[in-house]
Image 1 (cartoon, rainbow, N blue to C red):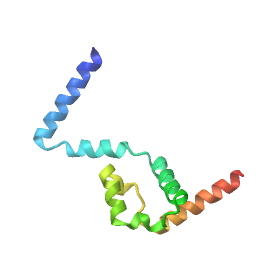
Image 2 (cartoon, helix red, strand yellow):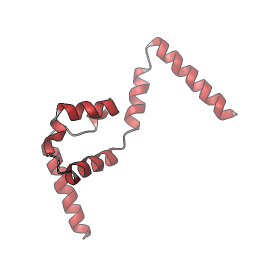
Image 3 (cartoon, one colour):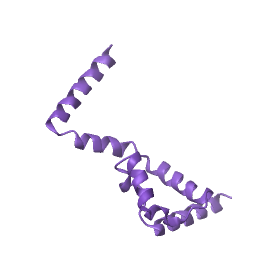
Image 4 (cartoon, rainbow, N blue to C red):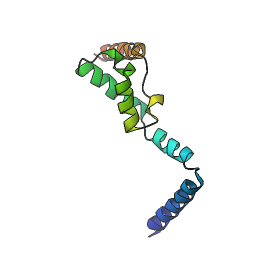
Length: 100
């Protein structure tokens, strides 16, 4: 019962912020907190390596648009240069090599 009341209160506060045009900051914070940087990095590297995609995929406007469609805060978390991908793959390779 308390959870339902708390959820209603949060919803009412959020609606009030929306009406005043002040919900943008809260939305941005929620979107940013929903991104796990390590998971994003690993998933991107896996996609590029396993599917033999060019490192420059991160520079493609279509790829960037896709990422923004998933989460409009993604440009802060997705590398924008193929050089960054090269560096991350080299680092991952060295770490994997040390484990073996």
